Figure 1 (cartoon, one colour):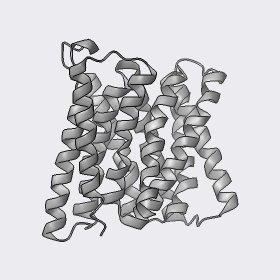
Figure 2 (cartoon, one colour):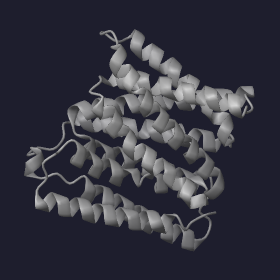
Figure 3 (cartoon, one colour):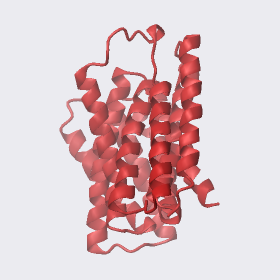
Figure 4 (tube, rainbow, N blue to C red):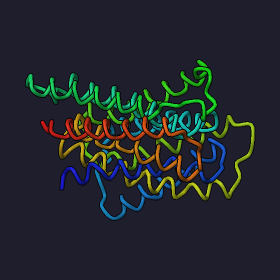
Length: 285
């Protein structure tokens, strides 16, 4: 049951970017709608089951929401430049490196030589899977490497989204105590971002992205629950099986043209990635 909970974020985060992209909204509209949906979910959850709002955990969780908003805005912006199937594997790969190594080395979730050996091997499998999955041939029109600006957006997005996960775990903040203050940090960030925006938000695209926020919120709650059940070094890598859902789903739904060589690379990548996820899921501290 613990590992079943850990797979809920994989489904939610795999579907989320597809839902957001389908709305044809601007990055700010996608962010705003997602944040409003997340705040509504957090308020309902708090009413049903109130959690502690002590000052220090509140501030830490609030800051984690700021990290999330920054990372998610950059992710939505990369979707305007490259396809979901290209951006997601890169961002998720960076998140995997950051969160798993942080949990293993800083939080001490890997202790024995077996855990380190299995953990490093599983990370190598996951990263190899990411590289295969994100392979793009001539059919994608990428005869040149990605521009440096896009690469930096992907890197910064991955680092910010990693930080939003690890900061709460580092301060040992319980799962339900995170949700409401984190969503308020997201909301304040979205307000600041929109105040600096040059164009007015459109109501309809923002409204459509409420579902994106709901899906994200369920996945986010499941992640923090599974962090407490099996540890972040195991739960977060499992959640990144979302790469497979987002990659294949976006290709099929948005009818991206792929050569047979690209499809083979994608399927091999997903297989290798899931092997790595399976290996790292055995490392419950």
